[in-house]
Length: 202
Image (cartoon, rainbow, N blue to C red; front, side, top):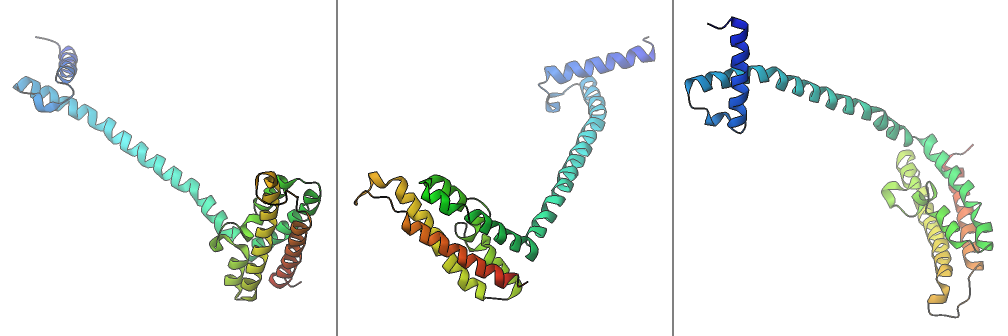
């Protein structure tokens, strides 16, 4: 007779051998002894499976919790103060564009127009437009009318700068246009100043 401890070890080894030789499937266990081994192995594997489920649940909860500050931050970004701040920042950014246009830095000028927060005023659709969101929040729909005019001015500034980049590859007289984009960006800055005055009358 084997001591009980040695018999237990023998049972475990036999179970492992059965598990491996049967390709990890208990459906091939046929003899009573093999079925007994399979039952013991399933009982020993159950705590490990439960532990994995528990750790998976904890990991999911941790990821969900980590997203909460991001969601809250997104909600705060749509406050009136934040959107007015974006308008003022856009005005500051636009003030660098005339000098870039005069220097023939067309791509750099376009980079300002296509970077946030300026691009939100004309290039990302109405759902992202700062003036649209302010109009809906405040109920002052004069901002919606100003939004269209400002968007056109910024779009035309970008279009003129783009044309100048490829002027030698397009039909026409091959001359750079500096006056036109300067007029449009200056017009855009005046329009933006007017919008700021309405959105933040201080």
